[in-house]
Image (tube, rainbow over all chains, first blue to last red; front, side, top):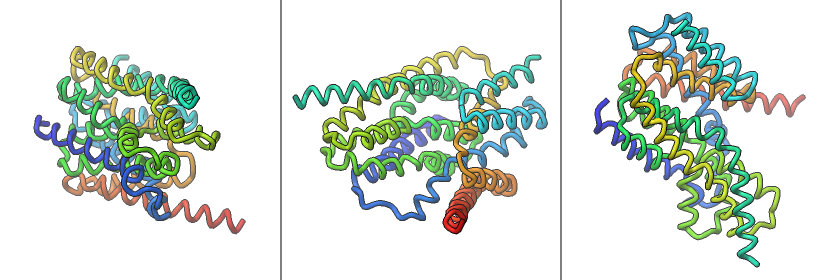
Length: 105
Length: 238
C-alpha cells in the first residue's frame, strides 16, 4: 500500500463524504428521495459489511493466521453476542476474549 | 432573551452528546491503532480522521487498502457504507433547511449517527424551537464527541506505532465489523440483506478486482429491500 494511494483515498473520501452529507441539507432542500431508493439505502451497511468480512475469514491472506475453523468460531461467537445483546461492546469483549484464548493460551 | 434560550439549547445539546463519548473514544483509538498497523503514518491517520469523520467508512477503506483492492473499489465500498448519511441529510433538512448556507455546510460536514439521532429526537419533542436554537443544540451535541474523535485517533495512532506487528491483528478489523453488524440487524429484512450479502460474497470471491464485493453488496441491498416490501404487504393483509 503506497503513499499516493493512501492520499488519493483520503482526499476522495473527504470530498465524497462531504457531498453525501451536504446533498439534501445544502443543495436539494426538502424535495425528498424516491421511496425505492430510500428502501435500498437502508440496507447498504448490513449488506456490504458482512460481504467484506466473510472472504477474509474463509481465505486469510496471512499464512500465520489462525486456522479457519477457529476463525469462524470466533466470528460466530462475536456475531451471536452482538445480535442477541444489541450491544457492540459486549460483542467486542467476546471477540477480544476469544482472540486471547486462541492466540496466547 | 433570545440569546439565553440559544445558550440553554446549546448546553442541552452538550448533555445529549456526552454519553456518546463511551462509543466514540474506543472506536477512534481502535482506528488509530489499526491504521498505523496497516502502514499509515501519523499525519495520514490524523488527516483521515479530521477530513472524513466517518468511523465505519474509515475502517472499510483501511481493510480494502490492506487487501490491495483497486482504489475505485476501496472508494465505492467505503462510500456505500457511508451512504446512510445522505439519508440523514434528507431527514434533517426539514428542521435545519432554513438556516444560513454556511451553517448548513458546517453542520453537514459533521453529520454522523449521533448528530443525526440526538437532535432529530429533540426537534420532534420541541417543535417550537427556533432555527438558531436548533443549530445551537446540534453543535452542542458535537462539542464533546468531535474533539474526542480526533484526540483518541491520535492516541491510538501513537500507541499503534509502539505495538509489535503480527499479534493476530489481521482478525481485529473483521471482528470489529462483525461486532458492529450484529446490533444493526433489527428486522428480518436486515437479516436477509446480510445473509444474501455473505452468500454472494462467497460465490463471487473469484471475480477480479474485488468487484465481487460490490456485486454482493448490491445483491444484499436488493434482497433487503424486497424483503421489506414482502413484510409490509403481509402486515397489510394480515
